[in-house]
Image (cartoon, rainbow, N blue to C red; front, side, top):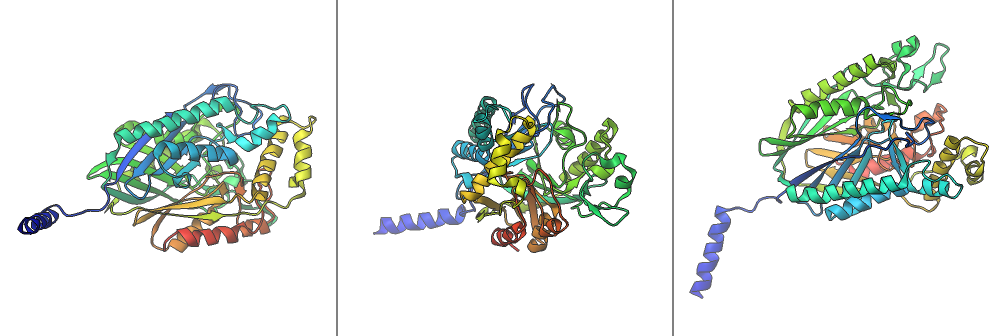
Length: 453
């Protein structure tokens, strides 16, 4: 009995000497070249396939362990990942990290001289003799296998994660909303990425944007490990000539990376479906360099302006998100099927039909999206689907109040553009639009379920 008491006292003394702390968090990072081969289609429907590579495309990401299950974030220098391909990515990376697919956040930065991958759409194209027209399947599968292996290998080099920091910096003269009021009072959403050559578009107000670049920095004590930068705009300065590039967002990220190789730099896109650099960009090389400089300046400033917090918890929340399919006559099952089979149409229009039909099949099969949120305590990271309009980022921030929330877009991109109801009311229409009005109510409900006020 005395021995048991002595042992118990020893345990108590040890407990007091070495107190139990929060979970031992660790962070592993990975970076993989995912550049498309020459002769590969860009943006899914651009007629000019890749002819040369100006700069490589990368998959950058991290694995966060120490919570209930690992959490993976992967940011691709690709245009979009949709439907079955999105599930392929989540499943492969989840297996590599030893977690569930719901805890894998995959986002594409949406550069246009980069691929769109949609397994369901490509399977439909295969049936009409258009194999590998949307994307080269064998190349994609080998690329995914390399990224998954990199995720698995990174776990062996995981580093203790003790703190995280948050910062915000205003970005000057990049973003402008597509929406412009014309001289006759009509509304256009035609201010695209290269509209700065049009005097009226260049002089029109910026419109609804989020001017802030947000950064989360992960630390091991005082040593920064990863800086996750977030900004909402289409990432193109010029595109469509078959010159593969990560464009100004990737080039700004690379410049910051070169300055300190010990800190992994990751850029993720905000809800910029209706936001471009069009007010400040005419598609010239001069303007591309100016956009690189401005974004780099903001990222560099954010990196040095961080409020640190101790890493004590990671909470993961997720909810199912079902969105309505667009009711347009051009998107009925009958019309899409006819367009897909119509050999008199261009290949690009048949690809669009396959993408639309793949998305319609998903909605009719009642396969909802996941709407996940990573909560670090003083910062939240939420993944939105598709080309989410900036209005949703502003809604989420308003709901979160003073809490720091990073709204990443371009998750599963089967939706194409994801407008607000107000935008639908202004008769917004586009060939890259597969959801209908009523989406806003569903997204608002999802925001309230996963974002903490």
